[in-house]
Image: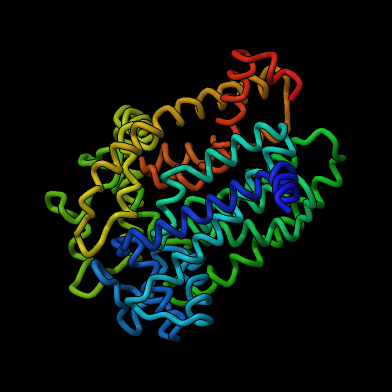
Length: 431
């Protein structure tokens, strides 16, 4: 019996790593009594309200309870709508957070499995195991499981889409998944273009087949997104994707911008204050005004915009990597005593991680330019370029980077393996 267990473990050692990763995530959500704050409370409350048939309502900090008849499109409905389905099935109230946390563990398990499978498919077993171990035991990837955040769902759907794209690759299924992805986080709004562009530059397809694929894909994406846009046209008079867009671009492109989030309501003579009231705010008015002011500021201050844009990238990867703290909120404006030590640990661990990520991206860029490679490594390059272009314009935020950790970890594992192969050629040459 013992020998059978040993043989199984040798053959399916990735299952053991995934199992350990799941145990660590379950232990974390049991040990750390994370209380959702800011965005995370918003997601949870909107999910509860939707599950109770109250509608998708506008609400403000700290509890975000919606006012009947005042609707929201501040963020797309993807994640709160998903929570609503779970809450409707399993039941939950405004002060019950376990369902959302357990859902994160399920999603994390899927991410670990898909990350391993992709790394094995495009590299080798050793790189796949390094990838899996890095992600399974990543403190940040563990800590996020106690947060009611859209990041883990976004990451899981992205990884599933990528896996199916490079395997089954049915344009309708991929399109439906990517359409859903865009509704989970607004930063993914233009990501369908990455998949379409990659198909267009593939060398092993005829032009006719490329066009048929892209059209089918676009129709499927549109079928998912259209109901949301129609709903917003009915509610707000415009088919807006997210009224958060104008808010975000203004917060990060004005005289008081810092390269990461700041409170626009506290700016001197804030232009937003006139649209805010005790129980909510006119999000459509702020969206329009924010876009107008931001575009005007960028046009008048191109040099400052470029400088601030590079600062946003630096903040996202090196200077403001403190998102682990959101797993350590234990009440409204109350942090766990170990929060600052956790943030310090994050900086120590993930600054080297991101340095290796950039090393891999330089390698991928070289392959693409010099050898015109259009493979999985090039696809990671495109994903990197897209999200960094969005951060370049919008906001420096490590939470924008976290959903890409699984796919970045594959690149990190590849670099680590190549270095180890140089150091220990006799052991790793025949991998």
